[in-house]
Length: 290
Image 1: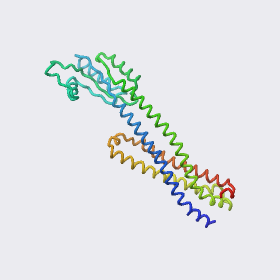
Image 2: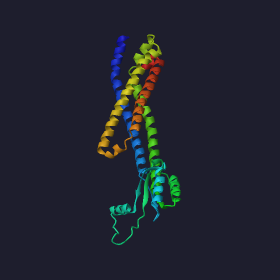
Image 3: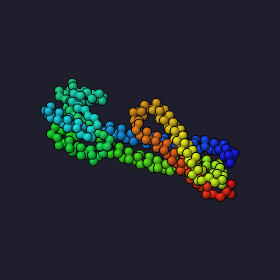
Image 4: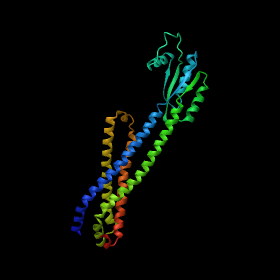
C-alpha cells in the first residue's frame, strides 16, 4: 500500500500543478472582470459628481441675503462641494473661456453672481434635481436655478445600461468559472482514483481517505487564488502607470473585497469538487475505474 501511495502521489504531482495553473487562469479572468466592474462603477460616480448646479442670485440683493443663501446650500446633504461666484469672478471665467471682454463696450457687468455646487452621486437623478430646483427657487435671493437636464438623463440611462451588461457578463462568467474549475479538479482527481479505491479496500474510512485530499484542495485553492491576485494586481499597477487617471479612481475597499472573494471562491470550489470526486470514486466498482 505504501508503494502504491508513493507511486500515485508522484503521478498526481503534475496533475496538481496543472490544476493550480488552470484554476489560477480562470480566477484571473473572473478577477479582471471584477476590477472592470469596480472601475466602471467609480467612473459612473465620477461623471455624476461632476454635474454642476448653478443658482443665480438676483441683482442688488443684500450681502446678508446672499450669505444666508450660501449657508443654506452648504448645509444641504446633497452638496459635495460649492463655490460662491461673484460678478467679477463670473466675468473672469467668461473671458477665460475664450469670449471677448465687454469692458470697453458696456459700463456694467451683465453677468449675475451665482452659487455653483456639485452633487453627491446618489442625488444625481432627474426627480431629485427637480425637487432641489423647486426648493431653491422659493428663496427670495434666487433668480434662477440651472443644471444640464439632458446630460443627467443620458448619464443615468448609460450607467444603468453598462451596469446591466456587466452584471449579465459577471453572472455568466461566474457560472463558466464554476464549471471550468470543477472539471479541472475532477480531471486532476482522476489520476488518484486507484489510490482512493485501494485505501478503501484495505479498510480506510471515508473521512480518513477524504481528509488529506480535502486539505490539499484547500491549499491548492488558496495558492490558485494568490497566483490569480498577483496577476490581477500586476495588471492593475501596469494600467495605472499607463493611465494615471485610473489611480485616482482606485477603490481600495472594493479591491480588498474582490481579493477575498477570489481566494474564497478558489478554496470553496476546489474543496467541493475534490470531495465530490473522492465520494464518487469510493462508490464506484473497481472494474469501472479502468
